[in-house]
Image (cartoon, rainbow, N blue to C red; front, side, top):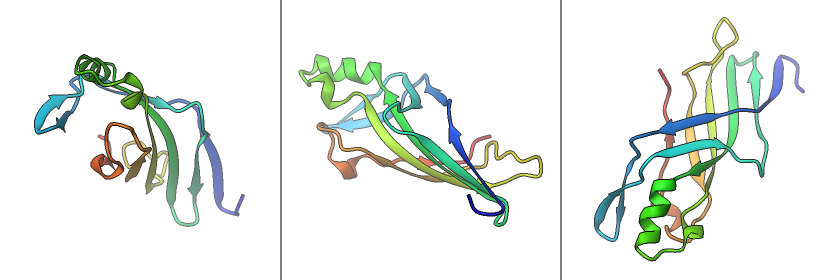
Length: 131
């Protein structure tokens, strides 16, 4: 651990998008249905609070569970393993606030692991600051 920094491990993360997101599939727009995100048990999520720079950086290893999307594609004859679970790595960075938090201030990018259903460049994700 470098002087002026604290390494940490992310141990809990839950996010939901109840209304889902639109996706394009073979020229038609579909909804993913409800989405649930959580930490991926297969890899650790870690970060560093660098007080010398006043920045926190975090690498989140996440897994998205899209039960509605899986059902939609299965009804179209697609194997469920081609759409679920979706695994990704989010890299986010933000300013450390005076109270040592960084709530709502992380921004970054995300790489989604290849899926059999979508080519790697077909999925784009951005990490936007929260409220």
